[in-house]
Length: 184
Image 1 (cartoon, rainbow, N blue to C red):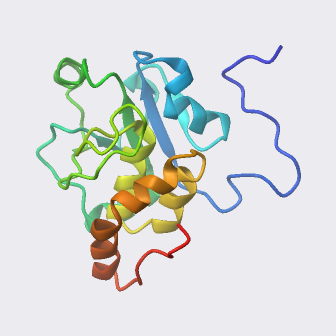
Image 2 (image 1 turned 90 degrees about the horizontal axis):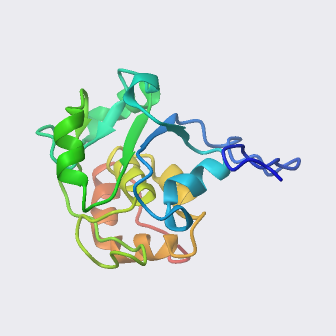
């Protein structure tokens, strides 16, 4: 029986890292149902690295923090390319206390309320799962294809794009990129 922390083997031609080179990290606090954990699923696909503590996360990585003063923006694109992006995977019921204890350096909040598409918090503004928070950050910083790729690993991922289409189209326009394909 394979250990759950190991990535499943990939066959020739289906390596998810082939076109996905961003360094994504998850501070995984193991507070939610493992069967519903989007961070664990991203780990299975080799798209994120799970960390049990902040000590192993790159110091200069941007950290998503819903309570941070600094807002994620286009200027953060280069920092993500250089040092990566980190999401804290914790229960929304525990979030206030978790972020007070962590006091993250390089913390950023989204600044706009994307609507959640995950089955737990469907259509709730700002109550995003880990994959949705990563995707929203990538969209804000112009990594549109990477955000769509992350979301494609979830049956409801396209719903996130649909629910937030006007906002995403506005962000894309600011980068001079055409709107989302109708097929997404």
